[in-house]
Image 1 (cartoon, rainbow, N blue to C red):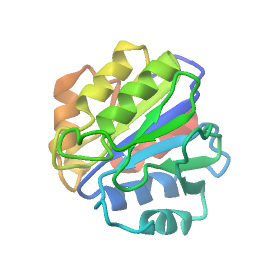
Image 2 (image 1 turned 90 degrees about the horizontal axis):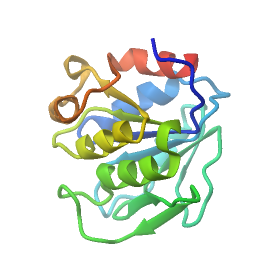
Image 3 (image 1 turned 120 degrees about the vertical axis):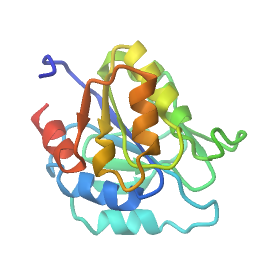
Image 4 (image 1 turned 30 degrees about the vertical axis):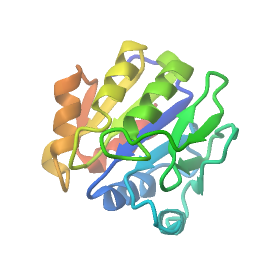
Length: 189
């Protein structure tokens, strides 16, 4: 079991198969979940904000696109806008950039995770879900280096297991959990 610690935010990265995984995760979080959830889902640069609508239909956390200089709040899930990297500044506000793609992606999971690790340090939880590349593995490693908690979806429960496997290989993760158990674990913290 993870020792008692105060966490201030959760970052989540997903790619191929991520919509279903995010729905499962958010659907099972308590409505009064105590930390903001910050999400990078690899999506087409041209996509509308369909992800926001689908996740808001779950009637759990309030889901919205992250805005420049916004301070993340408990009870909200923030999603990186299409074709923008989402960063967390040292003052724990958001910045959006159109810098070069990382791991062929913009938004990049590594960019979010690495900047959030610097901002939140040991008070951050990082979660890697299903996906078809290795984006997020270096960011999750950085979260661990800064004293945060690293959780990876059990590759056997992932629609596409490449991202979870890469994260497990990149660092000593704290928990490898079936998708259906991740929210219950978070709710217990």
